[in-house]
Amino acid sequence: MKEVYLGVDLGGTRIKAGLIDAKGDLIEWTTTETEAHKGREQVLKNLAGVIETLLSKTNVSAVGVAVASPLDPYEGVLFNPPNLPFGTFNIKEFLQEKFNLPIVIENDANAYVLGEWWKGAGAGAKVLLGITLGTGIGGGLVYNGQVWHGAWGLGGEFGHITILADGPLCNCGNRGCFEALASSKFLIETYKRLSGKEATPKVIYQSAIQGEKEALESFRILSRNVAVGLASLCNALNPDVAIIGGGLANAGMLLLEGVRLHFDSLLLDGLKGRIELRLAKLKDYSAVYGVVYKSMKAIKREVNG
Ligand SMILES: [Zn+2]
Image (cartoon, rainbow, N blue to C red; front, side, top):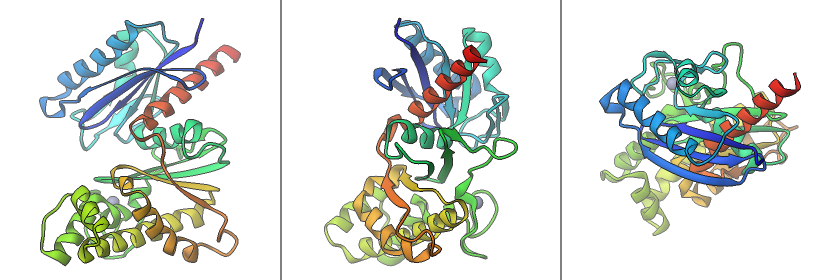
């Protein structure tokens, strides 16, 4: 019988989920609103609903859930996710009791990097470093097919390395974090400062493509900051491939070329010209692919001891 896994990406706005087989073929895909503003019970109901819908299609070996939250990936405990109404909550226990299946939990940014390593832009990398640029900055490091978790599962918070002492205030309470200097909020504010206009990242991108000076300059400043943060991480961690994903990566080559302009000059000599910079490939599917890969490995370990 075909081995099938169920993967879920639980974000603050949407729940995305799919059935994927052991070869990495997507069999079924569904999404729904998270409805985080309605509270924990409603979110759990929506999450369970998505899982039930997919379970009704076929037998699955395990369920993997990627969550937009700081968490303990071993115990499955979420620690006060900023965009989900959970507080401190053991989501693994909840799902295990409800579905009586092996449950695997992973942070969504880590799952994104693992998914890209398995079937996306990071395929074949020995050490893959990934960042997502969106409302915030997430990140992760995968080596030999495993997520680097740090001592307590909270490793890889790349958005909160300091790149400018006394810089702008970050959501985490510190100043000058990578996230405060290279997120969509930073792009919006930079564009407003230069042009006097309020616009979404998508509109700023369109204006840049049409050659508007302020929009191009905003992307130039953003790209340089991305290069500074990314090169610092690469100097410390020596990946062979680094990927950029998240909403701002929709700017594609405009962003990537801007980052490449500065990236190599910021690397240590031994690394210059050797780290491949790529855009993430799996878009909406990356975190689901990541938790499915992790679930598959967890099951194999159980079977083989
Ligand atoms: Zn921060």
